[in-house]
Image 1 (cartoon, one colour):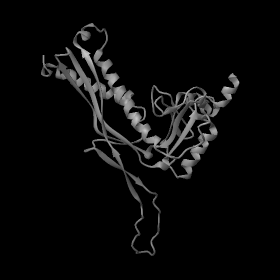
Image 2: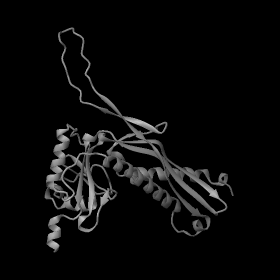
Image 3: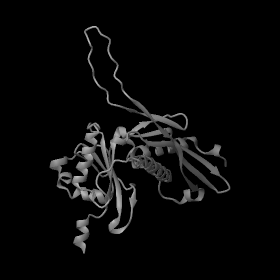
Image 4: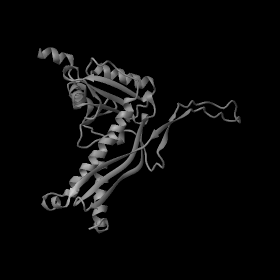
Length: 287
């Protein structure tokens, strides 16, 4: 049996399932950043555009004065990523489930986690912070980050996002302003099947892939509040799937591939918060 004997329809459908699973379930953060696809080459650029100032004519028929808008290109480098797995021919005869769908979902999840990891790495390179690592995620820290974005004239246009870890999500739920539907409503604007809600004009997302440090009572998670325009994700090759037969292994090798990169475009649009996973008050209550 050779690779030419593999059913072409099977390959086509498998690749479609991987792509759909990636779009629907794989990445939580792709929709929260600027995105460019069909990139040719190993890098692309995103433009940081400065604020434009309006002006007047000096007289009725005078020539208009062009606004001096600054453009600062930020380079985004792409890398190739793979998620492959072997499928033994004899195992295919024994399983009682749709192995194709299982593998498609597993590959999509793996690539989705990598997409999110690229975005989180880009966010981590920002320098603006709110609070210290000796604090939990408090309302005061959130207001401080909120003020920083407002001071930097970051648009308050519904495209601000916040990423928090599981412990910080619980800390948010302890705040009545966040947990009470009278304050936040029942709107879940971004993610179906995930912990997310909108509060203070910010789309809050619980994510398990954020940077962590320490252990026990000193364990911390780095959280972020940012604007969509502050981070870029570029794709040179959307998800593709290659299925080949290896007679020496008596198995098919199913490989999912993509080429992506992420970069920090505007540092003023990102605020980091290194937060304790266990608030000090809870620690004292336990002792």
